[in-house]
Image (tube, rainbow, N blue to C red; front, side, top):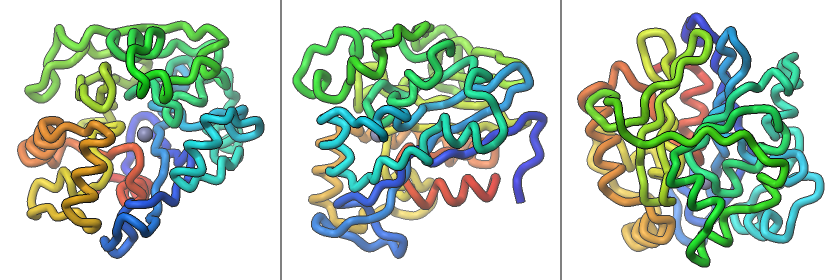
Length: 282
Ligand SMILES: [Zn+2]
């Protein structure tokens, strides 16, 4: 049953994936098999406007994809279905897209920030280092994964420094209150320069969107010993290739071990976590 909150939180899949190396539903998999994935975003009705946490693809990415979006979508087996975009899902829930006042981003990669142009009036919160990386990419990888057309409309950026407060023992940016809701950016750098988790207070508990700090739920399982279904080599390729440092996974696992009943954590692309979240708190 859906948890009863003083505000409404919707889990949106803003891009179904069917990607090589993703574990299948039965926790098997391999380098040459595809498994299901999602682009997990949050829509929060705060009572003082709507807030998105990550955006997934934008309408234009789906209807008129740039060569890079097309290339990436083919790689991860994403159909780029415009019905899955945040803007369409917001409309289908009876909200006006203009009601989206704030967007919090885990990072600016193309599959997380594509929806920015659909909400041009929203204030976009992210860590300072991530904005710097997006606006002034230094490496080939940064130049490839940050798309200028996704911010050509000139978003109202609200960069945050990743310190000045503590959240359950971790350094974080000072919390942002919007209506009945509270949002906290927790730095998990590695995947990108300014990558972070976004914690959203839901009553007495917290949802923690971990972005791409990990990619498979068992990587942060606080109880069971973890073995990647696709084998150590693939895990090494994925975590190293996608720059998912072990220290972030360890911090999240430790957080779940010590505060597990107060937090529901999930990453951006794990289909199983998405289904669990849609059913409400465990
Ligand atoms: Zn991603």
